[in-house]
Image (cartoon, rainbow, N blue to C red; front, top):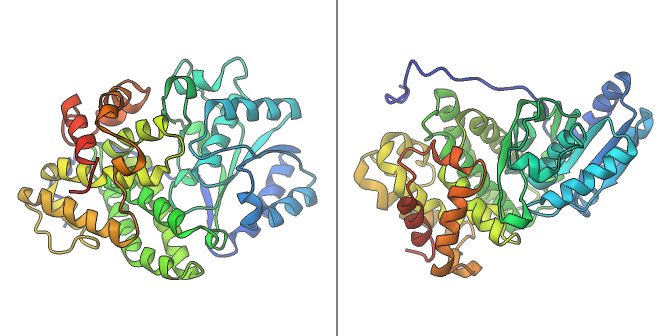
Length: 402
């Protein structure tokens, strides 16, 4: 039986706008994509990537010949860093404009693909800066065609309309969501992900776990977002330990990639709230902080804070990770403790103090959570009122292990 708290008169969208080629060997589909682009008169593209992952994964060995065989010239911008910045996007946009790029190919995890989405908008709106885009000083309704070649199983950005870029000067890390940046085509080939380190593997999988924790519990959650959320947690619980034990386990990589993709669709529909709204200030202040680690450190406190709002739903969602929950409001401590134990079991024992955060940072973090453009929208969807005190308590509870 579906969740009894679903509002039957709440109208929601079923968003599935990207054609995603999924499975082992899917990278070969780039030739079909290039043929379509060429047939439409697209002869110049900008490649947006990090320094070397697009080569090390083996993706470029297939992509470059496909572009050449279909008469498509390219320019590469490969300076995207984790937690990409407005400066990088502005630089890449300039490169694309000077080259005359007609489409954008993002190769990598969430950072390069989000940057690619941003470049696709900015080339269409050269009178603005990327900071203008992420501070909502204009609303784009068009972008260059985007091709997303995904090389990590965490963000889900290859199948949704979201992108995140940090504005360095203000310690802002906002998110945007526009229909014009759904990738036209994307590729999810798990074979490209076997080179992820154990740490990266865990962090990106924890990102997907957080996506669905939020998408299943926002005020606009739907049976659709909840269904995919439940499946995501089952897959992560089963296959993440296998990949940690054997990074070359292609079956396990396949299902973690699938979990990430459906998590991306889940939050494209159900949206997000606390963990992402509160993590963004963390990695805005410390850009070297891995996004997935930031999420992991605050997840137990967030779940404890919201559990009483949807105890049955969350007990079902987390059953593969924290078995034995009855779905009663008094289990908030139990589920938070269980998630903490599971995180330690997969190799994440750090808390905020381990990453250099102290009590002195908390007020600034609370300010950023409330002031950063877009984060107020996420917080407004939380299942409990997102007051400054609630936000402050989540950060404080996440400083050290309970």
